[in-house]
Amino acid sequence: MSDATPRPHGEPTLTELADRVWVVRHPWWDVNVTAVEGQRGLLLVDTHTSDASFAEVLEVVRRATRAPLVEVVNTHAHLDHVLGNAAARAAGEGVVVTGHEAGDWEGHLPRSVAAYDGPRAEEAAAAVVSPPDRTFSSVTAIDLGDRVVELVHPGRGHTDGDLLARVEDADVLVAGDLVEESGTPVWGEDSWPMEWPLSLDLALELVGPATVVVPGHGSPVDRDFVFEQRSSIGVVAETIRDLASRGVPASEALAAGQWPYPAEDLAHAVRRGYEHLPRSQKRLPLI
Image (cartoon, rainbow, N blue to C red; front, side):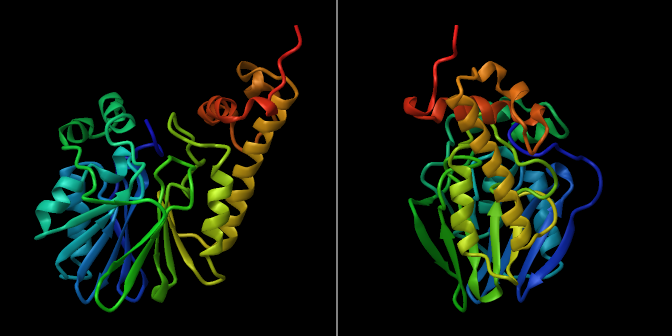
């Protein structure tokens, strides 16, 4: 599985973050879907894990606004954030889905869907993988008429196709799984542990003292939370670098390191980190 532990119980909740900006927090995966209304219509950031869960999210959004759905943004190509894309297209007329060009729609995503055996697995398996209509490399924007949603690729981290969605006039930043509130940040088989801290450095440049940051999972957070999480993710990267430079084999690194998170959550981080380090930063273990 690629993200937070799925939680099947409870009801989705709706929280107003700013003028015409809401977040729906769904108990399945404890995932967030953010809604932004403009004169042209409604934009949703992420679409959850199935046709049914997308419908549940949209029903909650409709308590706040009846604006027609016109735009969807995918923060990254993981099953719990994008498998509702097809249902989102069907829920509006001419809905355009935007994501980063590096999203792994043909590799990691279908493998993770096939491997998922948690709550509502049949729903997830039945969902049609529906990639974005529009992709970008570094920065783009979506005009909603009276407001603009800026999309920024800060670099690789949780995946190689992470993006940030910024609603500047509302001082809201949607961070996807680059920021996690409901548990340990997730380093999966497609993560970039050595680059994640640098991506968060760029994200922090977009976060002011009053900015509301929407994580991929859990409650909205502030700049201090993002800064502290960046520091811990940075410790993971530097610990990997230090262990490798001292000749500690990857197979022994989890036991040898002093980690800011439970070692059992860091297996992919260590493996991927060792793979991504240049040869010059690794010392051959003494025999």
